Image (cartoon, rainbow, N blue to C red; front, side, top):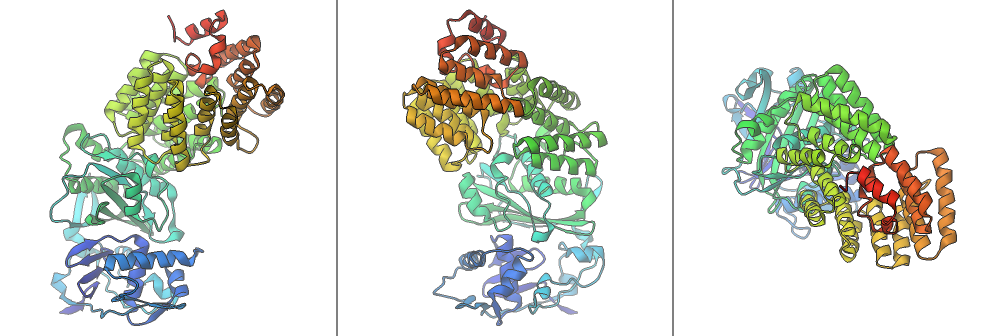
Length: 637
């Protein structure tokens, strides 16, 4: 019996509506999800004019977007189809009105027995009712599609850890063997109304974790890719910015308790689609989905993983789906690096642990969040760090192979215990377990700076910059390393690059201001420090640094005014004694400066670790109390 294929053909192209994939002469053509939807709407209404409003309502339902978004999608389609605005073979522009698909479109007939067991539409997995196209609601003409019964998927079923996952892939003939760098972008929903950012980011985070550390391919860390979560993100453009060979891009669609994940691996150099796969599963079996995706991606990358590398692909840190959901919400908020985000993240991690007390990564993330709170003064260090240490210890008791656990442990040993040998051991262990994980490289550079190993510190920051080339934090760490190494010109140049990444990133401005001060360029120093202090209510570390710069440049009255502002701020919230100490040092009040440094040591203020190497405290180095502080920090015999 003949039936219509679930695909459309025009010229050398085939648009497969089940795979959501465009092929040219049998080879995959890379399209973003929104570009695919635009093409499908045009093809389904071949010969009819679709107005700009109709297209925008259908592609971005319930979302206000500029007309430029539609124009961008059309431009991407023209590029994929190999046409130009002047030579319109497929998509005709109707000036000021809209677009029309003008090529002849056919739906080839297939025998029932030849219909491949591809991933069926989600609604068909729930029942056998015909699938309704969402663009019908937008008033567009659509072609009916045949629903496939769940039993027709039997040939595509994979058993993964005893759980059934429906899977279908399209393979590039020769899996790539020369890929050295990969970025896994945040997954995206097919409809903007179905956003669950913690889940979308969590899928990417899990794949990054599983594919990292093998030594066979460098995977960009999660913080490097989390910004690419726009629904219309071009994966090739993202890959070019991230300086990788290939990008893994995924979409998610939920219907009831079912979920479909479609993944594709795209070459950045020529936009070729190297591989694509679709996975269908119950939402409660998200772990099976991740197992299947991880394994297939590793195969597509031609990774020959054995031993612990192979185990990591399907390692579950919890079997509790609700605990995992809580963990993802915590990770999403923790990565905002704000007091409010970190505090709420701690609540989510604690809830995840309450559901599954054996959840090692939740303990590690809890430790990291408490560490961030303590280092930044968002919680008093003596309150934050004991909790961080307890959580890190528990994480490593549950899983000693967890890089995040060792990084969290190293953080506490360095910033709170001042146990330099233990901190170095833990951070090196984290790097050995996962060389692609950026946090331990960053933390290790701080340790190397504090202990006066400046060249090694710079090498770590430059290595981390290669892992995370778009992070303003990575650039700020380079500025910091050069500053403490007394290489002030290079610190200023690194700050220029940091500003190109994020002109509002306070830490880079803060350290650059200190570098300019050491060069005697006080106007430039104060300009940078004012940028660092550009926060509602002020930034106490920047205020202390500004006060010091004002004082040493002869502007004593301005320094005293900032001192009074710091005192007033300390009545409202925690202000580190280190900030007061820096300002008093600039004013030449050594006794009050040393009083505050001793308070900082008593309170275990994190950034006190730089006391020995910060040139702004050079005037105190002949003081006996200063020498005693260096011994207490275990930075001298």
